[in-house]
Length: 143
Picture 1 (cartoon, rainbow, N blue to C red):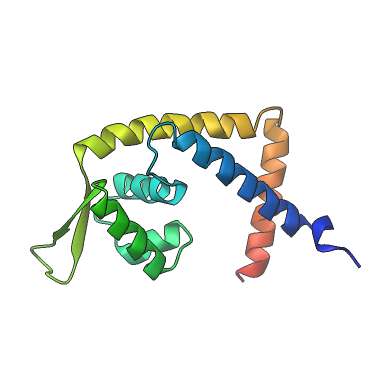
Picture 2: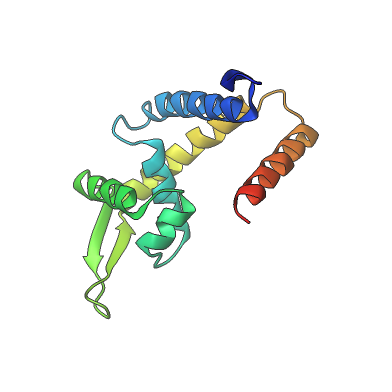
């Protein structure tokens, strides 16, 4: 029987946690308050016009309550503006303000450098095989 440290899932978790720790430290150099999850959500909002909070939660692998808390914090910190949709007053429109858009450009450069650093020395062939394997695991779990 394998010890948990000898499983692929342990290696995946260890790698993700290490990457997130490294990436968060690098993001702090651009903005000491922003988190990886906030960057992910900001990028999804920036890329998708009129995205719902439910769709946003699915895209970032979070539950609705977690996304709601992250959005509340980003509104409080001035990264986002939340306005009531005039056509459907039960719905909010999330908008990224100009200063956040500028900051997001800087953050995205850091994200690209983080990824390049993490993937240094790994061939395109190795990356494609890794992605193929991870997608098979995902498919097995989501049939």
